[in-house]
Length: 97
Image (cartoon, rainbow, N blue to C red; front, side, top):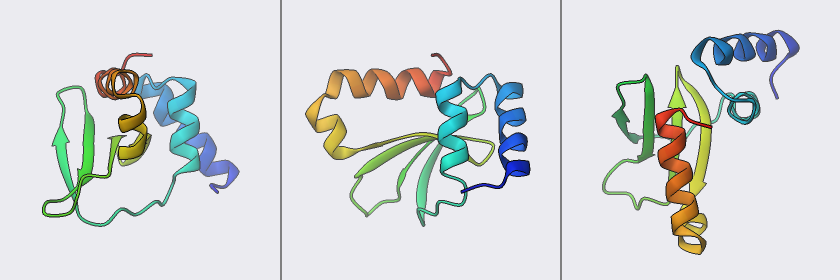
């Protein structure tokens, strides 16, 4: 878990980038997470879509900005409710609540 100073710094970065409260909380709770080698798709709005690098199976997708993970979905989540999860992925990638 992040220290109080780190929490405040992340919250400030989040506010500057227009992150919603859920994204700020997720970023704080996932500081220091390491996923190893990833494929990264950079978006024009500064956000990035991350997934395991080929040839590894794509068993998660996450949205990152300025090195902070804003959201994360597993393949089991999108298998259970693909329309909701895909909408959430696209909305988060776009930076919309």
